[in-house]
Each structure stands twice: as C-alpha cells, then as structure tokens.
View 1 (cartoon, rainbow, N blue to C red):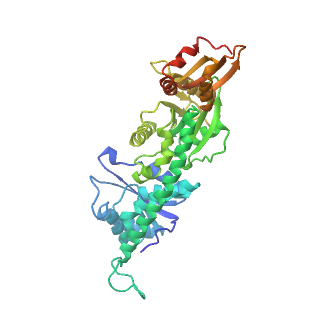
View 2 (tube, helix red, strand yellow; view 1 turned 180 degrees about the horizontal axis):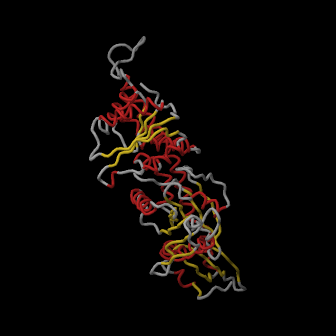
Amino acid sequence: MFDLAELAEQAILVHVNFPQEHSNEDLQELTMLVASANVTAMHTITANRSAPDTRLFVGSGKAEEIKDAVEQFAASVVIFNHVLSPSQTRNLEQLFQARVIDRTTLILDIFAQRARTYEGKLQVELAQLQHLASRLVRGWDNAERQKGGIGLRGPGETRLETDRRLLRERVRALLQRLEKISTQREQGRKARQRSATPVVSIVGYTNAGKSTLFNRLTSATVYAADQLFATLDPTLRQIKLDNFGPIVLADTVGFIRHLPHNLVAAFKSTLQETRDADLQLHVIDGADPRKEDNIASVQQVLTDIDAAEVLQLQVFNKVDQFGQSARIEYGDDGLPRAVYLSALTGEGMLLLQQAIANLLSVEHLQLSLALPPQCAAWRAKLHEQQVISAERFDEQGTCWLDIRLSVAQWARMLKQSDGELENYIVIAPVI
C-alpha cells in the first residue's frame, strides 16, 4: 500500500481529548515532536470523545474532516497524538489514502534519526522491529498469497509468514549483538565500582537542558539543541570536584510521557547507567508551566526501570527565564535537595558542584590509615581500587594513607580483613 520507510514532509496532526486525565497527551508536545522529526505540520485537528472508536479511533464524521484536510493541504501523512491499533491504522490509511502514524511510531522515527553510535542504532532498530511485529499485515494487500516463481510454487510459507520469520531472525541477531555490548558495558561499570569513582547520572524530561548542563560541567561538546531527544547516545566523562575528588558524569536520553515500552526494553543497557548511579541529577525546565507533570513522568519512568530508589538531587534549570536567582535548597535533614541554576549562562554551577560533593560525601568515607609493614597486601589492594589520595612512609616502615571510598566498599574490606583494618585507623589525617 504505502512505503513505510518513506519520510513524509507535510502532515496533518490529530489530537483527541478524553475525560480520563491519564489518557490525554499534550498537544504542544506533539507539535515539538513533529518539529524534531523534521516534518511540517500543515494543519491541526482536535476532537473530544468519551472513548476511542474501535474502528477509526475518531468518529466517522471527524475521520471525513481529516480526509478533507489531507486533500486540501496535499498532506502525505496523518500523525495521531495517540497509540493506534494495527487495525485502526489500516482502516484510517484506506480512508485517507495517506500514511498514518501514531505517537509511538513518531518517537521511534525521531530516535532513528538521532542514533549515532553502533549501539544506539541497534537499540532503535530493535525497538522498531518489535513495534512492527504486530503491524506487518498493513504492508500487504495479498499477504496470504504464497510465493511464486520457480521452486517456490505450491505448499509453503505465505509472504506474511516469511516476513514474520525474517523479522524474528533479525530481532534475535540484534538481541545477541546488544547482549555482547551490554557485557562490555558491565565490565566498564564494574571497573568504575572497583575504583570507587562515584557515578552521577543526569536524568530528566526531554529538552530540559541536560546536555547543556553536561557540557557546562565537563567542557565537552555533546550535541545540544532546542528540540526533543537531541541526545540519544549516552556519554560519560570524568571530572574532578573541589573538596571531593573525581566523579563520572553520565548524560542519558531524555524521558517523555508514556515512553514506549519497546524503547525502554531496547535501551535497557543504556538505562543501566541510571539505575546503578550513586546520584541522579534530575534536571527540570523551571520555565516550563508543565514542570510538575514532567517531574511526575520522569519519576514514573525511573520506577519502570527500577531506578527510583537512587539518591536524587533536583536541578531547576533556566533560572534566567523564570526570574529567580541561583541557590541551593536544603531538606529537613540539612542536605541539599534542589539547586536552581542556568546551564546556558553558567549561573549557579559552583553551587551545583558544592551540592553534589555534599551529597556524595554522605555516601563516602574519608579515612587515614597507618599500615605496618606486614599489611603490605592491604596497601596493594587499596592501590588496586584507586582509593588512595595521599601516601607516605615513616622511618619504621609504617605506611600512612589518606583514603576515600564508599561506605559499602569499606564494609566489604572490613569483612574481608575480619575487622583487622579497623585497628589501623588514625583519628586525624597525618599527611
């Protein structure tokens, strides 16, 4: 019927309001998604319904109105701000004689455009194929026909069955490749854990300013733009905080309302960085009137990926746009719970670094040890884990060490030494 890979340039947008608040999407967000996909929105049609129509999603009268708009504006695609069933999509395409895509397909298309790394491209292709699996019948008007040609006539697979088999094989191959990459990621993650370098993951709603903040903190040049899902591939950089030490900063993909489950599953290894982080920086667009809804959406995604229990610091970005000054907001426990700043101008960045150091210090210990010569093996182990910040030997051969490591790491070392290391702690640093 229609070439599903063809990129349409002119679109009619369709948005339906339902009485159930949780079922509604945001029309402004649809406009931003369409712009991010490099598609021109020619006209927007809205409707109110108590429930979706099982055949056309919208009523027959509204469907005719959309059809007229397609003809009037010579549009080649109709974009629904909702998730459509395969049968609804097929029925609408037959009526409009134009390609019909839903919200999930639109997001997948944007991800496909943004993917740059090998892993990112594999993840997007996997999500697209999983989404396409139930929609293969759309592309065939004679899907039940058997293959023709010499050697292919007679009993055998139909064309649809062949496509489904090829799709399953491709999905299996992608999963194997991603599993290999995931193993490599896990090795790097374990190496960072052994070195006791804290990982700080930047999370937040798409277009909140995460990549701009990442660039400001790391002096990197990660692509940042005023569009949804400007960043797709995760980026990690190590920086050093004053009065604390080195940390690894991870920039991750932005979240969105009702993030497609296929994407969450496909990006499992990427989202692992968020789940295993020591601290999450939840970046919030403070100038967005929908910020409370956005915060709730991000928390829901974090819950879905089992990352809601990670220590979190809220970062209200763009203070230059909503008339507030940079500051740290403290909780009842005396620890930072929010920082107000502008990643674009740099206002409040020192406050953010201070807040990060304060929160990570709670989870880390700074100790001084005096190890006698017979404890050389423990000195070697501390060096192996890269937790030593200063070291010297005295005339008796005692090794004086300043170390910084996580609470969990110190507990493991005490257990391995049967508590012996505790005997070598000195009250104050001597170096």
